[in-house]
Amino acid sequence: MANFKTLVRTHCWIGGLSVLTFSSIPLIDPSSVTESGKVALPLVATFFGTLHFSIALGCNKKLNGARLASKVCSFMLIPLFPVGTILGIILFENSKK
Picture: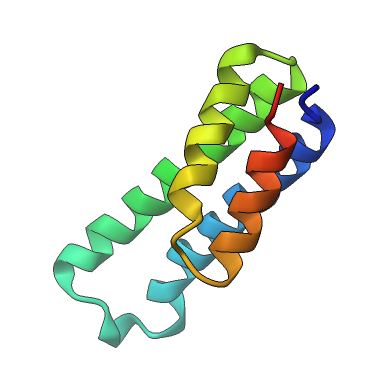
């Protein structure tokens, strides 16, 4: 059975980390960000944050679609060595039926 509690925690953590990472780059060193980066980075932060928080919300409601979305995200995280691999394996193992 899927461990929805771990999925909720992991997706909330990934969503918060992605929002913090992508939105803090322009704040730390604004001169290193190009004009397109000033538009793209907040969009990326919003997209990935919303994606992971919506999956966490679905897992909190124990929806089967959220479990499937979590499994898809886990496959996409696995090639991102080393942190993505660890998070991908955690998500994959906890999203099994």
